[in-house]
Length: 470
Image (cartoon, rainbow, N blue to C red; front, side):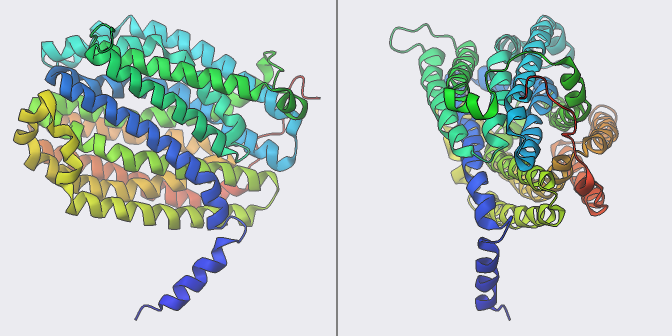
């Protein structure tokens, strides 16, 4: 019989402990709300497009995922500054935080130039994929503009590390919410052409995203470079330090590749599903859009795990770093259990926002398929949340190369399996989803086994000195 009194006693004991529930949630909740808000913004973006046009809606997920997959190389690389800042903060090397932060802004600038180059190949990319021609036209428009506006988002990712790495996540939340509100307002104005604005459809959605990201960047810049922050953290020391950039990339680039490869599995999956037909693609779009809420909250927990692990490793308190992971798993499993219940028992309520406007007819056709896919998503969510926490723990210590090597191998195997399943063996939608779940289970087991080796607990990534850190 379950001893309720003992359960509550254990919760109370762990609440105020080092790396306990309070410390974790204090950092995680603003990150969860912030990442969840970005998921909400993306959700609003897509159902505005669903109201506007079937083709715009069908194009938004594949094009958005492809752009996100490519960007993830750079986002994952740049975001690793969170771990550096966390370890500097743990070691009390505060003067190194500002200069190291600016090195990632320089990386963001160079990365945005690469994204501009990628945009020139968008026609060839989407024509090669082979979706219906009316969808390809919309995909190209959306993809190009998102690539053109990469810098504000990348630079904001870099600068947010100043607050994330030190556990000051409330500031990130406030700034991101302002940007999201701006984004949603311009979505409404530019997609439909209200209040004197031109009706731009999917182009308007992409422009609104860039406007929101630009507002976020401006707010981060004005906050971080304040007089007080500069005095304590050297936040106006923007001089490039090629030695540090090279050292940083040694750890950060494998992290970026891991993000890219993991997202590439989903992108390849969605693009391949698109070749099965518009019904299959739309049902998958709905399932992934709904899951994005759960996923972004998991990302918030994962970021917190890396930050706290990095902080305690910086303090040489390795046993507490391990406690962080246990706390993260408890909180993540509690949250994901609620999501799984909603996927299984109230799928019609979750699908409802997509049943309005131009997409309403196709939603009625795909409703039974989308409900079934949400059940697959429930299984997928459980294993993915576990894998993300274990991978975040080892990355918080600096063990990024293992993650990259693992994901390279699994990407090749999974992509090849999906390709053979669809184009050679002609399997259906549900079999493809089963392959995706198998990928996630293998990933979770692999990261768990690596975590249990404890190698990550004895790494330190902040030995190199930073220019202008006095």
